[in-house]
Length: 106
Image (cartoon, rainbow, N blue to C red; front, side):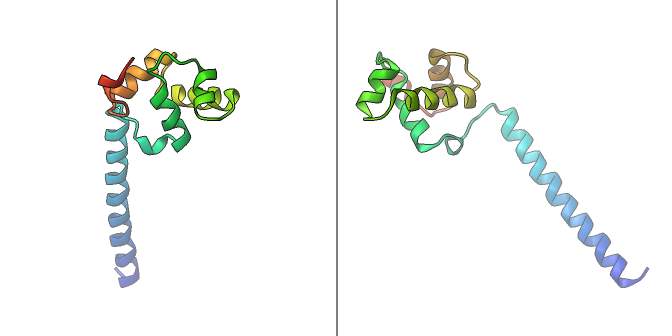
C-alpha cells in the first residue's frame, strides 16, 4: 500500500474517533436534560432571576428600566430554552438545573 494511502487511512481513523467521541459527549449532554446557562443570554438570565417573584412582566420591565415587550420576548425565549410551557414550569426547571436558587422562590 502506498504511503500516502496509509496516511490517509490513519488520519481518517483518527478523525472518525474524534467525531465519535464528540457525538457521544453531545448525546450524553442532551440526554441529561441539562441546559447550560451559556445557552441563555445575559438578558434572559436577568429575566429568569425575576420569574420566581410575584412581579408581572410589566413590573419586571419597569424594575429593569426596559420595555415590557422586550421582557416578554426574553421570558418566552427562556420558556422555550427550558422546554417549559409556563412561568412556573420554567422556574421549576431552572431550579432543577441549578440556574435559580430554590430558596429564593417567592
